[in-house]
Image (cartoon, rainbow, N blue to C red):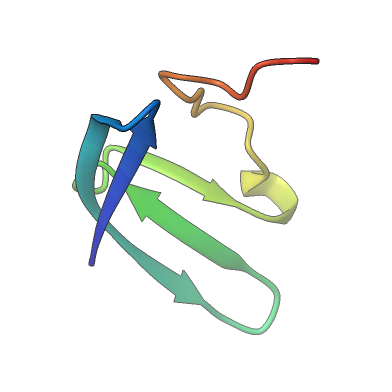
Length: 56
């Protein structure tokens, strides 16, 4: 699958993603498997959004 991030009407990031899950885990692989998000031991520790949500 492909994801597209749009900011102010402009595409700022796009890449390939897929997910895997098992009995005790769910992992989303981003950027052709070079980054991952998930739960438990894989919970959002390494990947940082290039364009994080602004704080209000």
